[in-house]
Length: 287
Image (cartoon, rainbow, N blue to C red; front, side, top):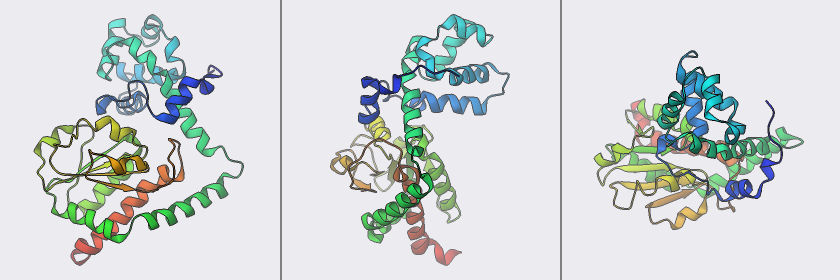
């Protein structure tokens, strides 16, 4: 696979990467990321199916989306132009041209992942970063804060977790761990209709390390939405948010939208701490 050179240094892509103001980023949750949506379709579709073939082709040519034409894609995927149009509409785009505009996501993702490991002594670098992260989070979040959230989870009949794909695994494991303590926590998985059934006693926990995901759903979880709204983030700007009732910020350092030990391990550590407090207060005597 031969990539175009110089695109990562383009001022437009650099600005999008740093500010997070990406074209098209505020979509329905289903289309929050073309990158993730294609991976999901590819993983869940038979290899010989039309969806499997088209998703594979788009992923293998993501770096050059802006140069693709629908005739070549249809021919390479053994389908018609209308078949390609139906596929792109199924993943949240109006037409093939709008998909081509999402080429920026390839360069965003590449920079995000490769910058993280681009250190001469990565093993020692990561060890030091993790040590600092654990220490800082322990200072930032005391047991009282965790106990308050644990109490809200306990009192809520329909506790709801909303998270981007980056945090999905940590959310799913927390959901499983709560279930063995007889507490069912809902993971919306993109279906926000559950918001309509919430009561003022319920709690909504939004996990958004960078803040991009939270910004994309702020209009959906407007101030009038029932339930206590909590955001867990690395972005201190949400401490002044009018949308969320409370903010648990894992770090007060100046935040940049890059992959760090915090964004990779901080959310998981937060859930471990929260689960421990819930277990101590409500689950220990039942085991």
